Image (cartoon, rainbow, N blue to C red; front, side, top):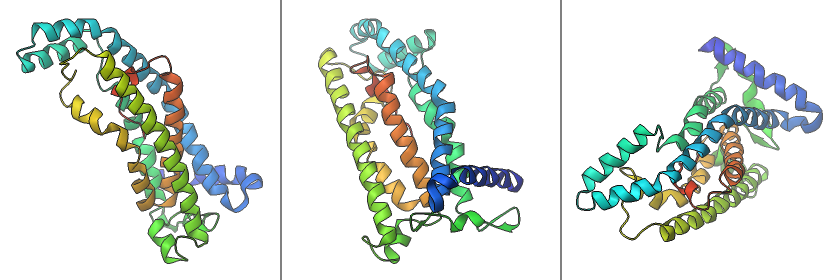
Length: 255
């Protein structure tokens, strides 16, 4: 693990060196954003596969409607029949989770890198790098302790929170529209397609705002990963699901 972390630290340092002429003291922060974009680019095929899976689930709706009529007095049999239909058609109800799961190792690697005092037995030089005046190894609480909300470090977080809130509001409004259209298009008395789906979709529009808490508590370097990935996801979903007015509401939000 130590040698692997050394390699990863070296990669971040090399990216920062390449970006130094453009971003000066914030080159390492820019390198983290670039690294995140590269990870999301690698994961993009999974996102496209998730969109194809969503289209496949939409195509199953007429058959699912027939199952609801057949098992309208037996919810357990209905759920079992729907799951068997998904299995027979090789359609995963949770395919939208794959992009999020695939990039979790990269996030935790970055988190560990900027939380460790030493890498490979040597002091971790990356801990001294900053975004503007905010250390990449620090968090929102540290910023408040050094000048308050409107101090030099605090203003960095104010800007990041504003960006996160903008993306979260975009996701919230889009998901609400999708779910409203889905409810209007569904027959009355519909049952959830898979166990727990109703509860998941009920709270899904609010999940985007949970990013605000994540950004506040993790090291700033990890927060940059979250913000970049979340913004990428918002744009990616708007493109991949543009021809599905209500289908994308069943997908889990990606990191």
